[in-house]
Length: 261
Image (cartoon, rainbow, N blue to C red; front, side, top):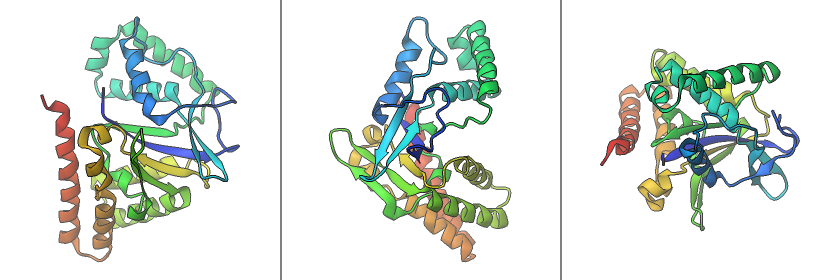
């Protein structure tokens, strides 16, 4: 199974735009990769879930509940489109062309009814995209060493928007052609779609099992990216890009584990 990491938006109860189901079904975040894997190995394999499940992740601070819809169908459709844009050779080898065409046609029909739908979850396998780190502060780290360990970060939407906006403005001025600049801009546009009192969560997910709880719990990527941006703001360009290369090299090393035997 892929070692998946996630970036989730939890909106206040009552503020969520449920696309297909009014009553959410709370599910654990740890179970999502297994559900997707079971769809793929089923007979016949399913490109997209046949029906909406209403699955959502619940976060509570003791006073208020926040919901993050799993949006499985929307995310599967988005992944299908992205795979086809990239060539889709593996996809074509796994599924008959007719099945893929039917899934795309169904998405087109669904989109006419839900034209403003935006997925609450972004995922990545075997690593964490560098742009995710700039939305958080090192003091916002969350570590749970319980039966289902969790390592990640949580911040308010106000803080996430402020950091991404400030980072984008800085990168646009100092490194307008760098890929990170466009990636930060796109991430900022995504979170602007949600409620201003939402919570943004970065979940190291499967990397806890891949790298070990203690190694992940002491990862300094968020602090390192904060230092990168501070160095850029102070016009210490050599220091900034040296630190940035260190973060990139760290996560490239983790990604290479996907090809390890």
